[in-house]
Image (cartoon, rainbow, N blue to C red):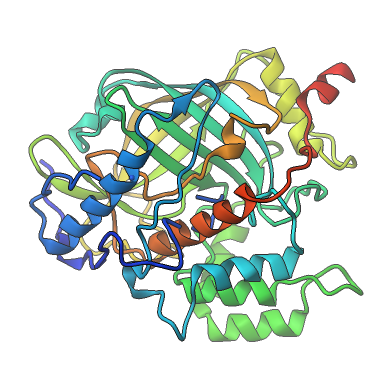
Length: 405
């Protein structure tokens, strides 16, 4: 039997309308007013649910063929206490991405290089044991996705060790949405916004070598032993050969509540499934070889991942993305995410979606992880900037790849 998780540890004094500088904001792959229902989990969680529902409400009805427009509505200013006048702001964080990669008008400040995708999620109903969200009821819902590589350069050369991302927007029949950004790392390198911010600068390539300054990185790791420990875990899980056979992990813990009102912490993972269509091998040596292989493979048949929910237990950290949960934790196979097609990024598809991790359906709520509010805020600032900038074609073009086969 599930035991209700102690939600007193969720401390996010988020009140709609407090931010005048940054609308709804993030920091992983870029970006809902009804008051919302009371969750029965105490004041902090009540404010969290109100904020989430405000964001969701602004998006209802905006689903369109191939994409969903993102709206910057000014909700999460001082979320989680990480934003204060003398510390980080969404603008300063976004500026740091631009300092590292240069200004790339019209593109996300991180995970700039990407490819849009469409597909479905077929729920087997098992997830309803722990979560009442409509996405886990038996049935199938549309999904809009985006494959990407970390970094701010939209035309960077594909490398096997560059972090890969798969962001998803689940379009639920009740008008709600669930957006999540996942990456192919078992843990995240940082556990605070400040640490992430500092690591960006320490990892900036030196023009003479094209690599980070080893002294700057060594000094950063000395100040952040949690990142050094996370890096050791990451090195024990080398990347797979391609996007299609990558396992993608959620960056943070969340709280899910079932129909009986029982709340537990979870982390989610997308595990690749064998395909009847052979994977096209990635061929290192060309600029877009990872994306080229993804395009060719998707053209031959659908790609599939199992969506697993891992259930946390008392003592498992929900506020530290650098620390893994024990392998013994129970996981629930909730169904299959299938990608039927990929598309060049263009108006109307995933290019225009802000994959804000705080766009959540009823039944899923943020944990006390400070990275969540930071990601939300910086994603929004990034979206606001790129939405007003001139666009240029994506470096990854589906038609070009298929015509060259």
